[in-house]
Image (cartoon, rainbow, N blue to C red; front, side, top):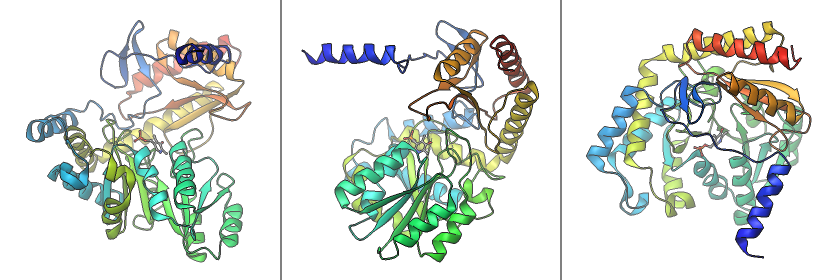
Length: 397
Ligand SMILES: *Cc1c(COP(=O)(O)O)cnc(C)c1O
């Protein structure tokens, strides 16, 4: 069998299993309403464009300026000749924004995570991970285990007693690293940072938080999970993405103590062997950070929109998972139901993704709504009316 034929037959199986992903093509920039090819205008409730900065004029202009000044590409990895002054400016701004002493950017947060565990940990060390952590953290840990031969443990999601037990069992390790998402993307819940930091102090552990869904989102000024809990400066390592609230282009970073950025520059493999962040992307991300610093009202509007949507959805008779983040999952049970709700909403001009097994556990299929500061009350009411019509038709409410 040729490779092509084998792949085609596996793709057919994905379709029969209902796990095949069809791509939707957008014909306009990411915003509250977008032009979707073959669909016309739809309200987007599925984007990570939390602050509406993907097409914010200042953010686009920041990218253009960097393109003019530095050109399209870095043509090199950072340590050879791919480091531009805009990288330094961006990394200083990011570190300050999230409350750390230094930061280092990567081509993505996936890369930042992948570059972290295998670099920091050795045979005598252990990483202890929340069960629901993002795939990039899981792969980072798998790599660390394979390359650096570190020990690993997983604690039940948000279960502090289980985390304490895992820390206790790891008393003899040289370094104990607790790694958690700040906001869990499928549930929309927030890591119990005060408890995690208290346990880390008790057991002499280091805390790493992946704040990809929290940077620009949580806290009064969008500085993330630490700000949400009034704990800025108390997290050892923060990784996050530039591909969500901060302009949404691409890129990620690791932030931490002053020596962290330098150490990762010396040793982390995605940093040593993969190109630096393109100047355009660095320029738009820097403009995004500055924009959030000057416009905390965007973060406030995001929180208001999330509260309004969650409340109205509940009033309609839906049962969204309770929470404080702009991720509002509506649990339906069977995968087919989630897909059907999502399909019918799209026909009504509302784009919201359905997630089923294996992305979420069997029987917990859901549609996941994500709110943005870019949504107007009109956009949200339009979406809620669609939920009402479709929900009634399917007998969900
Ligand atoms: C989205 C996300 C990532 C990946 O970010 P990229 O910059 O797109 O690679 C990593 N971690 C978490 C928790 C995420 O939500």
